[in-house]
Image 1 (cartoon, rainbow, N blue to C red):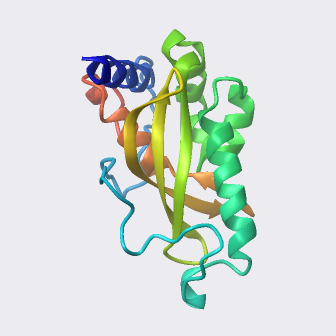
Image 2 (cartoon, one colour; image 1 turned 180 degrees about the vertical axis):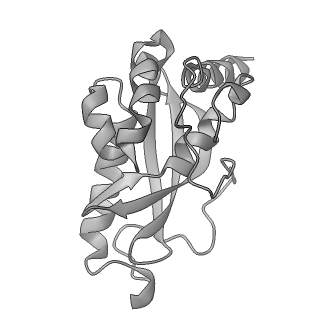
Length: 176
């Protein structure tokens, strides 16, 4: 029952993302649903673990650290919407959604714990994270992606849209 209430709260937080119609939409043409698995995939790497050179940035440790820092900041209720724009792929286009989310009371309880980062290229990584509500895992072992854009590792639009799709009101946001 307790787990169900946390999942409901997580879905309510995701629902806040779709309360305001966004003409620009939020798709990145890749779609995608959040995937959960009980353990990280075999291709996932622990901090400090090397992957083949073609599948990682020049400094994988620094990139991993930046991904963790930026994801934590992006999903933090304390981070202003203007800062979140800089931490989201194509953030300028997504600004209306971020501002609506920031005003929702459920967003004040939502955060993430990045558990793992696995590079798939020099500019993309799979991220395993727990979506937390009130500090407790509501969607544990969720899967998302980070992208390097303009020299910064960001939460992918695909990840944000996958969370939006968890909401029963997901059809209100075209493109996600």
